[in-house]
Amino acid sequence: MVQINFARKEINCKIVYYGPGLSGKTTSLEVVHQRTPQGHKGELTSISTDGDRTLFFDFMPLDLGTIAGMKVKFHLYTVPGQVYYNSTRKLVLLGADGIIFVADSTPGRMDDNQQSMDNLRENLTEMGRDLNKIPLVIQYNKRDLPNPLSVAELEAKLNPNKVPTFETSARTGEGVFQALKAISALVLEDINSSDKKGAMGVAARKPAAAPAAPAAARPAAHNVPAAASRGGEGVMPQKEPGSVLRPSGRPAMAPAASAPAAAVAARDPAPVAVRPRAREQVAVAEAPARPAAPVRQTMSQSRNALHQQVRQVQKQHARREEPADEAPAPAPVHPKSSGGGAKMAFFMILGILAGAAAAVAAVKFLFKF
Amino acid sequence: MTKDSDLRESRLVFYRNDLGKIDRVLQEFVRLSGSSSVLLVDKEGHMITRAGKMPSFDQDTISALVAGSFSATREMAHLLGEQEFSALYHQGERDNIQLSLIGDRTILTVIFDDSTTLGMVRLYVTETVRKLEDLFNDILKSQKDGTNPDIEELSDMTESAKDTLDALFDGN
Image (spheres, each protein chain N blue to C red):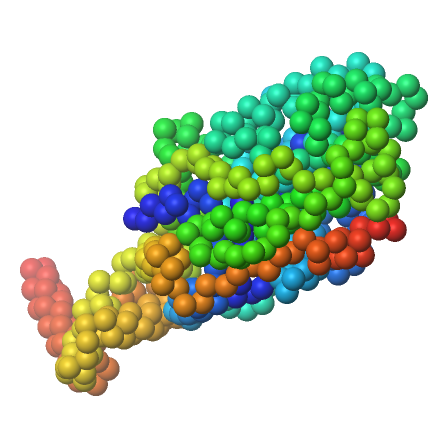
């Protein structure tokens, strides 16, 4: 879902390249990455297999620039196209604000295209969303192949709603930017129309704001080459620009802590062990100093003091490397002055007594013989 | 525990004042925990705000990967019969990342090195998560009932978008 950050003057959107395996989604994103001017793009990150097949997603941040005073940033993702990666595909699709469907024009791949489009619709439905209401454009990719599937056939099977379509070749880069431009326009238009509905209870309503730009007539299936023209006339408004707040249907969070986290906590017990004692000390030390302070303040003070205590203990721990195993804690607890002398005297007496006892035992032993 | 289901089902909107409050909580967290930096990321992988040292890595990419990582572990949680794992930890040789879910929509991403400890970070994360959950509830409430004084309107972007898109995409 779109994130609008008025404080940072930013709008963040998520665009997903969807389609069957090997249709050219990753290649399209690579083209976008190569050709986007520096300063408008971040790194292209791929989570892929050794064989360069997308395992989870490819990702690239794209900075569109400042539009109406807001910095617009798109996050571009590709999904893994292979049929058996549907669960990861769904994860990437979650919260998408716009979709570019990359269909493969290779003869014999029509079924794969259709299957993938059906899969997209199903996955969205499962998330409580409707493909007909999400900004969508279609790339008919691999048009540079000899004897590709006819555009009319692709249109008939994949584009019943007549969304904008583009004949592309990700290999050469032809048409890829036009498709991205079209989806960008549709998404921005969708944000504006959604905003009038007041997302998240925001009273951001523009009284007389005109609905999104009317754009040219929708391109017919065989009009698709128009998309290849630089002007982006292929952009057209979605059927229901007003419909917005789509429930995502995501599960609520579980309050339970994770197992790995718990394991890690067990591995790092030091602060937990130190905490109660330090807190007691702090309570004693702080109480007379600020008797009238509100509870909240006292707590935060004690937390700071606790923090310092913990750090101190850690430092002492680190320094005392030699017989560090036993009794690391007492050092900060006992005051240095009189306690040390008493201890010394006690040990000296003990030593003398032990010595005397040993001497007596030795004399007795000698007298025996 | 927050159940900001309203928030989950719609877009996230943050106004100046909201973010100021969130930033203060994060700055306090960084100071107390000794972390290098902290990022607040939504579940779609967009960064909301950050505090602490300016990280050397690409913040957009790390945000996207954090969200992806959380999504993947959610699936693992489902397989185990859990609804979600609320915390994740990635340990490195020098730098570590602790991720904690806040409510339904956001993830607290803490990056820390060996100048502090995981225990220390976790100690303050728990408290920070609670504070942020309360804050998000307040934000949501104030936006819903219109009492947020900072509510702004989004200008119509369609016209100005055209020029920007032309400049960026044409000629490529």
